[in-house]
Amino acid sequence: MGISTGNETEPDAVLSAQPGDASGSVAPTVAGGMGALAVARRVPSGRTYQPWGMLAAIDLHDCERSRLEDPDTLRRFVPNLINAIGMRAHGPLMLERFGDGELEGWSAMQFIETSSITVHADEVCSRCFVDVFSCRPFDSSAAAAVAVAHFGGTFTLRVLHR
Image 1 (cartoon, helix red, strand yellow):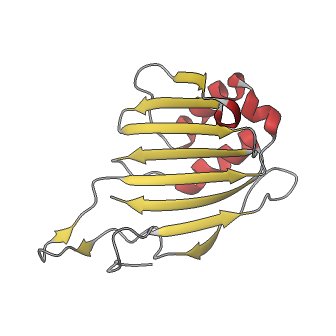
Image 2: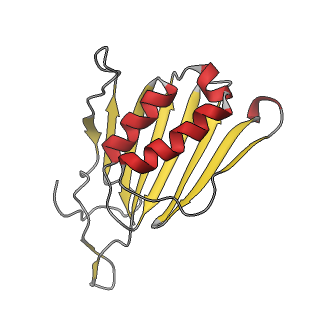
């Protein structure tokens, strides 16, 4: 952890976790990258780059398919995620099912006062992809734990300061 001087395309942190005990808790571990606190770096002009926001990309694998197929699970997930990371929704949740064949599935988008949350459910492969971007810092591990609680499976978390 510390100041990142690496390639700006690399994630600042990558975490992964397995399901925890019977309470459903997860214990993330650092799987690579520079760490979530790596926020300032030099850019080619020599100026210090201060990120404007934080992106948490949460990839869930081996989810419970029935939860991915259920729009009510998504309707419950998004407000719970917003509460867990201390944000506020801005406008209504957009939730639609679309696509053809194996690409058909549910997607959700919610503006939050500091940016947005998107969710894409892949029922065929039992995966779910959640992206949270905010110009205000938030607990990305809490976001991943809420995702696992709603969809099951295991997660990989990538945090990028942009």
